[in-house]
Length: 160
Ligand SMILES: [Zn+2]
Ligand SMILES: [Zn+2]
Image (cartoon, rainbow, N blue to C red; front, side, top):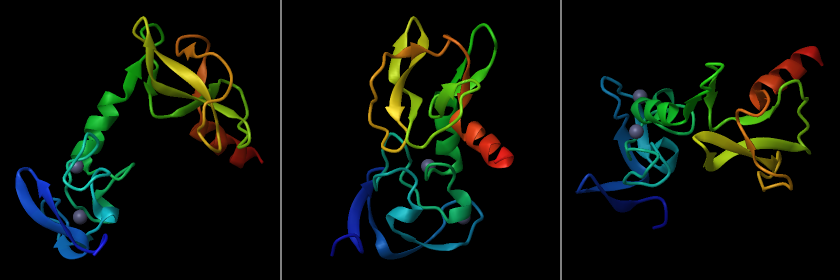
């Protein structure tokens, strides 16, 4: 029992799932042997959820945050925000720091938590290591310049 083998309802049909259930990647034309465990699932919950379609895909056909190509494209679009004045495109899943800052894993980063003000996404401070809210007021993404933490880390590694 447990996660090895269970039944779920997907698109109105009952299917067998779990890591003990052998399967083939559901990407068209791909024959990779996988199983129906959570590692190969698009989304987080078997059967599909708001993040994924509930399909099972090989490593090559799962992208980003464990999503198939189609679900990952939808998520990219839903999380894209374009600054109306500068035209700069933001991915609202990114962690940000004010431009020119250096990253400290024990410090604070800024993250969009779903709140908006006058159609501008708000970013709020969280502790980098735990993602727990840190003291400080939310700021609008149009207030000052922001940089993607991943890019800052990349720069720090190169110049270290
Ligand atoms: Zn999917
Ligand atoms: Zn595949």
